[in-house]
Image (cartoon, rainbow over all chains, first blue to last red; front, side, top):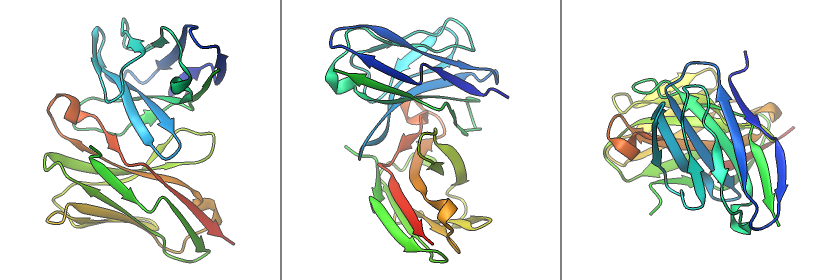
Length: 113
Length: 115
């Protein structure tokens, strides 16, 4: 049972570089989301999607892009990395609607130098 | 504006103690209140959840108490064990309504249970 798979687990970038954090789920969930976790800040929503072709912004979307071309995949793109984007990133998925249980991936630890 | 306020930030208890973590919310449209447990290096996982039509929910050693009028809810861990040492997040969401349908998390409480 793979659940939610995130790659890579660790990444170091230089300021201004771009990269894509990958997220895939095999539970046929309609809803997928990206959160970032910073010390003392909890989990903050970056972007979310309620189905293929539908994405929307969360609380902290600036500097990040997303797309949802398939039900399974929800990549997060950093176009020009900044040190403020140093964080642990979590992808999560769930059935949309009344079943709110979020299934989280194991996270990507990103450092921007 | 922080929609879900969680306290304390950290908590240390002895084995067998009853740690209590508190959360308060402001948005009266919220109708689902889960707690997530996160171990180091792992993603959060759903522990227990409650809806506002009940005042208490118990699952094993974990209990949520809910006070709708005060807009507060709390997590109690009975007979705490060292294996309960983790970070706990409260969260809230509305049933419908665009961005309010997303889970909004508190800032987390790091719990240490000493043997």
